[in-house]
Image 1 (cartoon, rainbow, N blue to C red):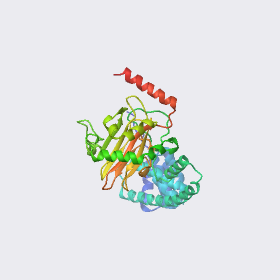
Image 2 (cartoon, helix red, strand yellow):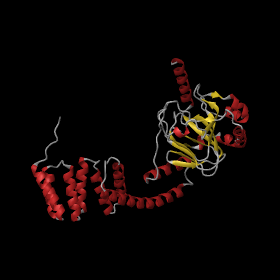
Image 3 (cartoon, rainbow, N blue to C red):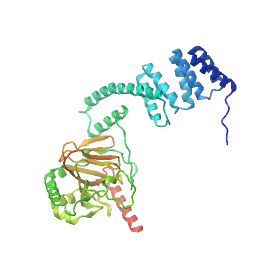
Length: 391
């Protein structure tokens, strides 16, 4: 077992002298002592941090910064040094650098086992300072966004806004998390741009008749509506437990894993015929899936991710009380009846019906628009071959 090197005696002695001087409020003596200590043991981070503290007491911002930088050159993840660096930049009114430094501190906080009340107070003051800067930056950034809105297309608007919001700390950027098949090198985009799905106009044009057929189902559901969440017996408790075998989130399937639900097709013939004409994700034994999703009052679908990024999920809102919302990644939207949209369900998403009324939408699977036709055929060929090989 390797042993921790013993610090030179001169460094130990000088550091003790410096600490005594600090307690006595004698910054000049402390600087001289800690300078000797760092000369004797230049690789000791704590000594450089102590020297920086002495310069801080002396009001010498420049040399405090030099000492802090030496400490960070030894360990950039040292929380105490990063904290003092952020405070120094704040005092110097170097606002952009201070904002970045405080962001570094924020990222290191969770690694600290326990913080003293004094440090907690210093952190709170730093976060308040950052918030004031972000308000100013946000106002400036929003003016830029407003000025460019008419010049940018749908993709540019979403990406530029996401860039600005992330830079300001106003949002998080999420990434794909697939429980099943993952297709490499696709954009991890939360909502797909409408331009990729020109057939959404056709889907929306049939909203009234789709809703009428759904209302017929809801008036007499019989066996057509079942709980969407059906966990296997013996599954451990999870965020899904409250929805397990519950009609709080119900589903009425027209298609499920590529198999038609004929009784529902017979009750919803216009919807079924429309789905046959749409370019849905069709993979033998896997797709399409299409169903009415019914969320009871005051019900919440918890954050989760889907099984594969090869598909886009289409929502057509049919019965939506005001206030129902849907979040994908860092963007939350309100459903609007008859307005369809597409998203990547392998990015963290959730839904909420906070109202006293039922919410219902049509959900269908389509291909991820970034997958070309030859790729789609190769995916189908692979899945068919895999399913026939492995029984």
